[in-house]
Image 1: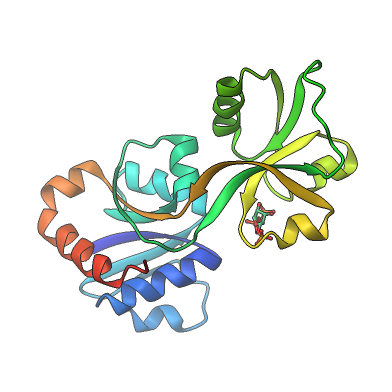
Image 2: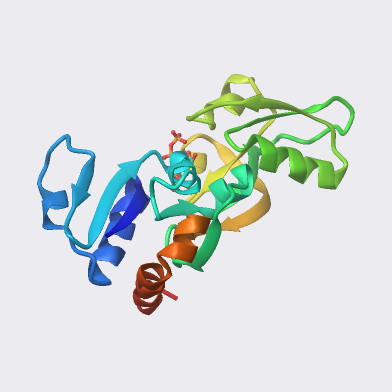
Length: 205
Ligand code: PRP
């Protein structure tokens, strides 16, 4: 049996459909309930917070999982990244109020969930920053004056638009990746390779 950690939320639904179409169906998962683990004799699925997927995979309680490349770049887990699934495409961007202009004098106040990625990006630009780590609703920060800019995910751009913010720079394209635990990849290679091949066939280009 292969153990799979999937991200809760909008990406998770798309990913589950991909796995089911690849031959890893689990009818019980579609029955509304508060259950957290769903198993057949072939597969065991569990849904976790997207940023927790690499933790379950790295620690080996999941053989494989699906995580956004944003999370992999931010946390650099010790896992194999096997496949770009071609879904969950979005961009990590710097955004601010339209009228905001960097004075390049005082440290730039940057609100973000992606502390490490933002720090690396601004270090590469030689810009001193003051990082403000938030856990959600990042767009509020420049609106309320908590930060000058945000580093956040932009998918459709609706959240920025509805809050009067615009993209100032693009940092990184993002998509969902199939990741594997390193030992599982070695010792369950037949099962994981079979899954990989079937997902490759499902992959949206
Ligand atoms: C993400 C991101 C933006 C929004 C972008 O938030 O942080 O707020 O999606 O999507 P859009 O460009 O399609 O509008 P999420 O929904 O994950 O919630 P969060 O505010 O808790 O981070």
